[in-house]
Length: 128
Image 1 (cartoon, rainbow, N blue to C red):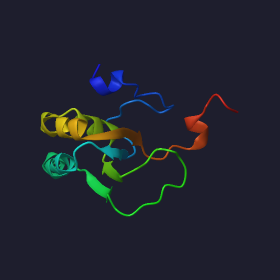
Image 2 (cartoon, rainbow, N blue to C red; image 1 turned 135 degrees about the vertical axis):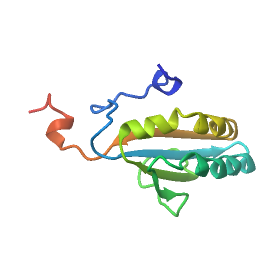
Image 3 (tube, one colour; image 1 turned 180 degrees about the vertical axis):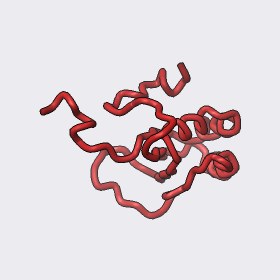
Image 4 (cartoon, one colour; image 1 turned 90 degrees about the horizontal axis):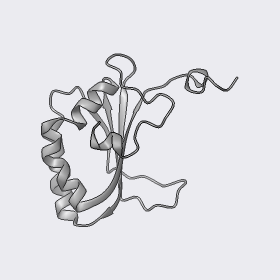
């Protein structure tokens, strides 16, 4: 089991890796900078790790408004991957692990990966 699995991921109804299927979206929120220049170095380093993954950065620290929630948000990133497995493979890759420590040392963040759209009946089959 990887460190991020042990940290509580995989609790949603569709939390299963898939090699084929809908695209997956990695959603990243930054809540606090411990060292902003160090965090910027992380952001710059991440770009090269995405090469060859089929990933597409959809949102990256663009203007936003928090509509609900009580945690401060400094920035949001959304990255589209071809599949859930592609997203997990990138997250666990040697290339990303080489820069991930910069994020952990320099900011307080949250990251999750979620598969694309699944109809409500499939997401909650126990509810009829």
